[in-house]
Length: 224
Image (cartoon, rainbow, N blue to C red; front, top):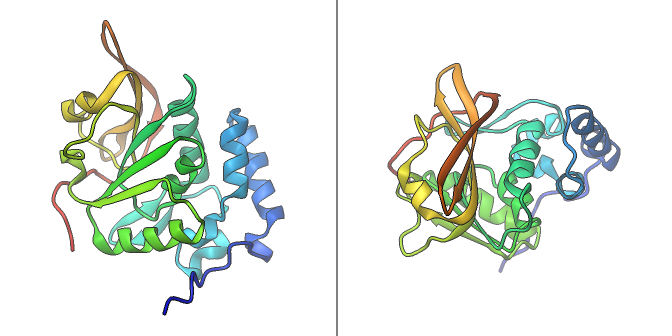
């Protein structure tokens, strides 16, 4: 019989509401202006998306390890990518390439109609599912698969977000975007990576480089 989630959603000390407020104040000074994104990030318990030993660092402006060579992006990057994705208005359906800890997934799930999220590493997906369920976020569909292959039978996404760096913007991702859709994706290798905004219009595809970033590489294949 399930006893429900074992994590503390409210937090205390380094994970308290006051600590979250400091994170939001920092995001404001870093230029994040979308109040929807800021409100959701204030409410979402980031500390449950890392191992308990790192929970006291969850609201720092830094990336944190989540195992399997993957990281939880720093709050600024999560906020910036979410803000860029939503800049043109509400979104009905969003695809996330790389569920990871599930934090970016949780933020998106509170801002859009539904989220489809693909993760290639099964243990990470299992933990993310438990966290998302514990938060009562039921508008998320998770898939254990190679994210580079997209989601068979799906498409017409209003938005796509990538949480690992691709060597270039995959045409397969562009094909999944609806006309009018937006994609935010880190692109590049090593220390030479940039956050790229891709917009699909009736006239074609536009790509804009936003700012330098540093992500783990986007890899193919699956790990059970």
